[in-house]
Amino acid sequence: MDIILYNIAISMASLIMGYLFGSIPFGIIIGKGLFHRDPRNEGSHNSGGTNVGRIFGKRIGFLCIALDMIKCILPMIAMWAIIKFTNLNQILINEFGAGLYHDGTLCIYLITVGALIGHCYPLYAGFKGGKAVSTYAGFILATNWALVIIDLLAFFITLKKTKYVSLSSIILSIFSCVFSWILFFVNFAIPETLQNITMWGNGFYINFGWEFAMTATVGSILIIIRHIPNIKRLISKCESKVKWIK
Image 1 (cartoon, one colour):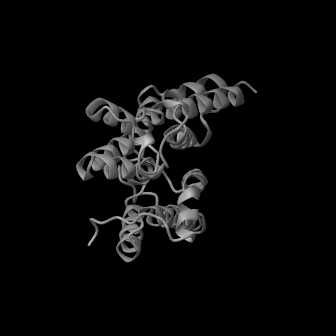
Image 2 (cartoon, rainbow, N blue to C red; image 1 turned 135 degrees about the vertical axis):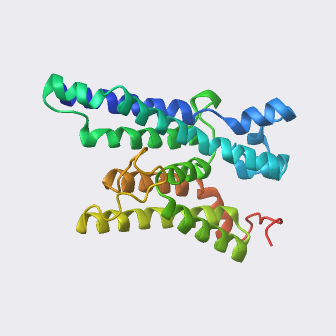
Image 3 (cartoon, rainbow, N blue to C red; image 1 turned 30 degrees about the vertical axis):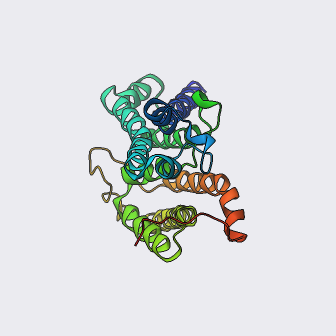
């Protein structure tokens, strides 16, 4: 029973840690700090990189996107480092005869879920944040370079054809969700075939288990929910198009 409680406590701590990182509102910080304007009061009324770029310029938008990606990647690396270098798993094994569930993989992914929720509903900004796309992209970048290639192709092909960032973001999230489950079932059917194609090799090791697929699914659902107003505008054909894509 004690080991179960420890796992629950560590999992909750991971979720909270990710949420606190994800709640850092870089778009608002940049907008208010550099321009004395809140991006949530203009454009599409959110603090994500697309809206920040639309209001303050492409370079500022890309900076915001990069920071929103990093705020997901850093806590994942931090949790991995805690598990690896503190020997937390081995300590629990020595104490209780059992360690962290799945060697701590679940904790790393719970951090990602927390960061995604924090970005959408930030504690430090009245629970009014972005749409999770950049943070979701950071999660994919940190875990699976194969999906990065697939997602980039899906995003930019859709963007080039339609000029809608919102639709491209939704398509990206759906592709990630679908392919993450494909990878899971392939790895389940043929064990260890995919375990080494990860951005961080044998250092920051994350397998293609159900945790990865579930995190991609949660992220995809969050992105779609946050884009409901955009979906309504797409249906009514009044959604804004980007002008810089050629």
